[in-house]
Length: 122
Picture 1 (cartoon, one colour):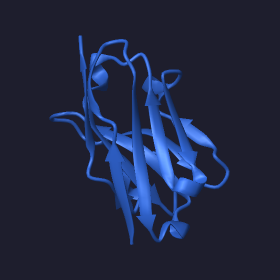
Picture 2 (cartoon, rainbow, N blue to C red):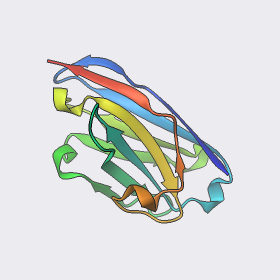
Picture 3 (spheres, rainbow, N blue to C red):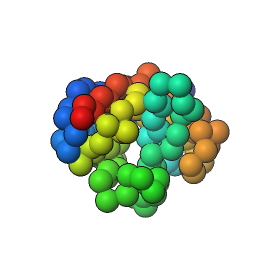
Picture 4 (cartoon, one colour):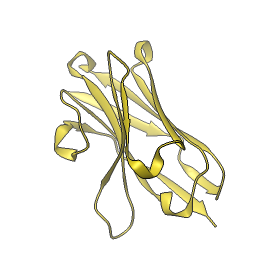
């Protein structure tokens, strides 16, 4: 099993920045990729970004390209999501995910964190 714990959410004004962290523990050697998803009220959970754990390759959803950056600290088993130029439409619960496969589909991931709220005021 792999446990994921997110932190770093909060309330920020439009145009501001936040950095989310997700620390993994347990059988992390099974993990090939980690990602971030988000879910706004009344909407389905949607893909934000993923990173390949060993190679560091990244992929982003179009609406966050150029504003969000996913990165990882390999030795701390931690993945980050730096969010800049935040917009009210970025408001959601953000979830960290990890899995042996990777992709934009939630089914690609085996393990999930509990989520952290990000609220962007206009």
